[in-house]
Length: 213
DNA sequence: CACCAGGCAAGTA
DNA sequence: TACTTGCATGGT
Image 1 (cartoon, rainbow, N blue to C red):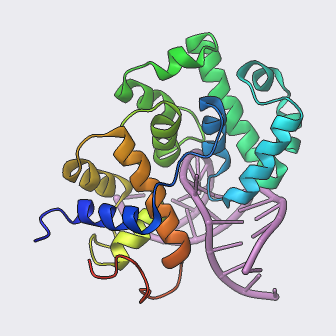
Image 2: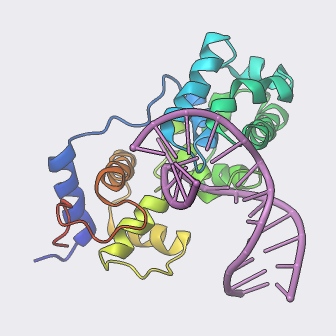
């Protein structure tokens, strides 16, 4: 009776782990910054970088936009790739300054597909970072696919190993109801599962809560 | 010591 | 188009 495997998996994960309360962050702006900082990086390192920004009272659009890139880079050093990420954040802030007068609410009020294209046009923002900002900062129903999503589903034989980002996203979007809260919780639960039961280079874990799917 | 972490862009053939 | 490489800190 599994005519909707993804929904069944979701229910299992939710009952196993409970709500994950994502994204960790106090404001949409902080979430957006965190989305860039967490690219290929452990969240604990990102937390340190964000703590630095908070301690120095730098975590606002105006301040960060006016801050020299080198100073920004020093503050986000613990997140790794700090020069690269400082540049990427600057690119994003520049877009918001140029096209939206620095008004984050106006930026996030754009229609989803328009906003997505804007984000993807920023050098340093790819599909996952764009979808993370859309979903967790702007509250749009944009499903986020990450390495855990790909690894979990392919390891369980639910999708082919060679599936692309958009193959996987399409699968979720076509199967699940379009619901921001569902997308939010589902992605967070997959990350939780991935961290605890589906690590890189290991075989399918016998204790995995969804091993029967 | 090696390997990994909530990617992305640029270079090569 | 399909690989490969650079970017970098901190935990295990």
